[in-house]
Length: 350
Image (cartoon, rainbow, N blue to C red):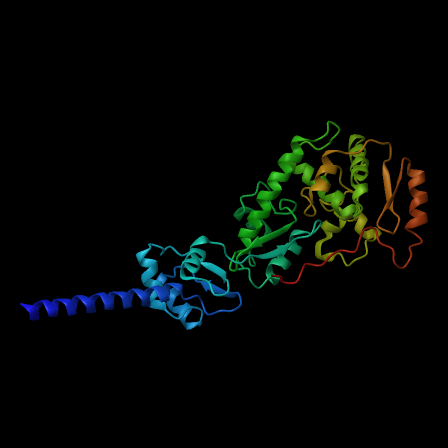
């Protein structure tokens, strides 16, 4: 009997010691932080399970105890990891790692579209960004407009120029959808606050006029006045006679200098030859240009001409306008420009 009690005591003691040892070992693994002493980027591919993620963390030397991480995740029901790139902080704990990989707080990259860019410039910027998945490269503008469910034949003017953030692997179309939604919000708000003097009859016409204003001047204080000129011309059944629409209609045929032959070439966008608005916007306007189109400044001027420094002279009569043309256009300085130099599509940026 004494022998049995002795054996029971020994076994119980050994069990307690083994349990304590195992518990201590497991606790030490629980408290063991990741091995990285600096933030490290870790990618969770779409469809990855906890076991494969734990194995890759071990392979990359971030957290060596793959089996423990897998078991802990299963025990605590933290197995719903979300795909994407994550920045794991230095010496993070197992709970912190699992919480991060479930959060969806992936690394964000950015791309910037400048006010006044055309859709073809947007295409270039999207194509040059190596972190964006290309899905529209082979599509026509009309097909892209259909994929974006736009109420327009092409995307021109329908996307808001801004900086957009995305995760690695985002598609070009998903970024355009962000820009589409923001333009819809901005346009709706500005349309609600439009002036009674606005000549445009629809939000789409507002985008057309705003795009012309955007391309005509880079001086913010002139936008309302330029919109006023175009408004008064339309009210008097005068043609808009604006060079940016002619240039847009020429497409690839335009080589940098507008000529009399260009002005005499009839296209739907040649507002020297065709009355009213061109059929579509000619660029992506920003908020200020949209606001100017919907809130033209009052006045009497019907003409304006670029001075060559990015600003314009406004005139009421054709005779004064012709004199201004002779003064600024026919004797151009070498550094003459009608607006600030155009900004090229950005390099791929993170």
